[in-house]
Amino acid sequence: MIKKKYTREELSVFREIILKKLEIAREDLKYLNGADRNENGTNDTAPIFKGSLQEGRTTLISETNARLALRKVKHIHDLEAALIRNESGNYGICRKTGDLIEPERLRATPHATLSIKGKELIEKEKLELKKVFNRFNSF
View 1 (cartoon, rainbow, N blue to C red):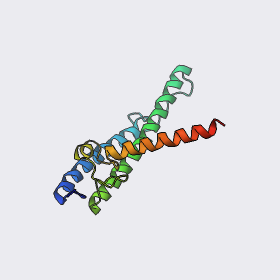
View 2 (view 1 turned 135 degrees about the vertical axis):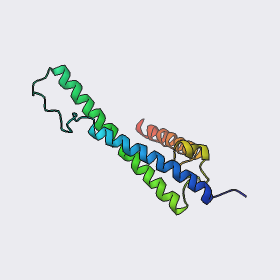
View 3 (view 1 turned 45 degrees about the vertical axis):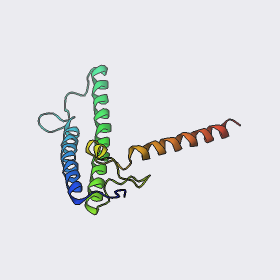
View 4 (view 1 turned 180 degrees about the vertical axis):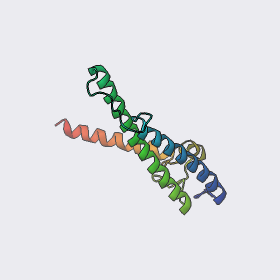
């Protein structure tokens, strides 16, 4: 018989992994949100005129940190959703195939919602759709 759900003990182990990754992600986000502040906790208040190279560098760093922070927020959201699935007992079930996601995959990526097989099926479907789309665009 094929196993369709993880046991409470297995879910408990995954829960600890998720909580640890959540803690790390929240710390990373805190750091990213404060990365453009000086030691006094305020935005840079240096004179307005800076060389254009320095100004461009500062802007690039701020924009990069903002993008990283947005990605981190999404990661935190995904981990929180995984925690909810874990607590409801539906954690680790592939949303494409309905099979259990490999435990090794969940240890590495605890917010995964697709097994490797499920991910491959979705990629294959995307390629097929792209082929169909390209056929219609060639007319």
